[in-house]
Image 1 (cartoon, rainbow, N blue to C red):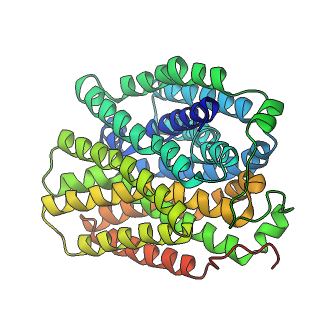
Image 2: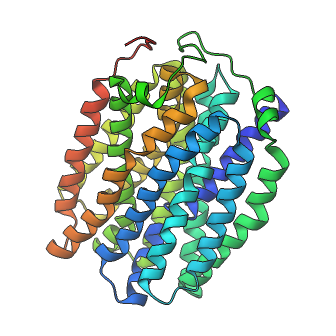
Length: 401
């Protein structure tokens, strides 16, 4: 691994840490204090996650093809500026609709910095050992979730949620932006300095995939449906995890800590499942993540005591960290690194219906029944459907359909 390769992984790591940690990863910490500030229901606050997911899906369609053309620096700088501005502006919000409107630029910025761009950047740089490299880079997601959730919990407890948003925005400007400017080059340098050698089981790096051909491919649909359903369930449950633990008797600060620890365990999951994707077919590593997540929801159906519920949250957190390296390896192996941005960007569209409905559905069911058990059942059914979609995937790459 060269010095430049390590720098690429480091920037992808930081981008994902900030993109996910300051938004989706720390969202549960803001759920109750924001609801209390604006006297809103959990379902209303959860709609913020739905807006973010909608914008993520739409942004990915535009960002993906630009990544295949090498515009990593422009995309990442734009995303960092957009996210920092939205977070700092959110701290000044005086009404719920203003916060809701700011979820639009937040959602647009996440694919510019997060798993889509980070995955494409690393996936195009590495051929052999791609899964391991993606696992290291994707450790940024749980690391950011851990650090920013813990920071948010401490700041919200002491001075309020508005100061937490300001801290996040300033950190992006002071840490992330200089790192992007230092490492990422112009489009031509990114095309020439980061060549990809395909693995023996990968299709040609120039297979001629386009939007129409991808959308007509059954394997793309199977993989993208798995992404949409599993990520939607994950987002829906993560948004309510802190409140779920509070329902079981945990204090707000303790719940915030456990949410952060669960996210932090994703670091081990990213490394393990990234390694597993290199050793086995990536779809098998991905299926393992889905099966374990479903098993935890079965456990939650029986209204476990607090200690057992925390254990389940930690297991899901660890496996959640392994989802994106496994998925990105699968897409790169099946459709080639040259089309990775396009395929990943189109995949983001499948986040919209599931990611938008997950958080508010859990909130609405909690408001209606006074507990999360019905929502757990809905998420379990959805997880099973995601696993069924993945099982239909043909494991061997085939260029012709």
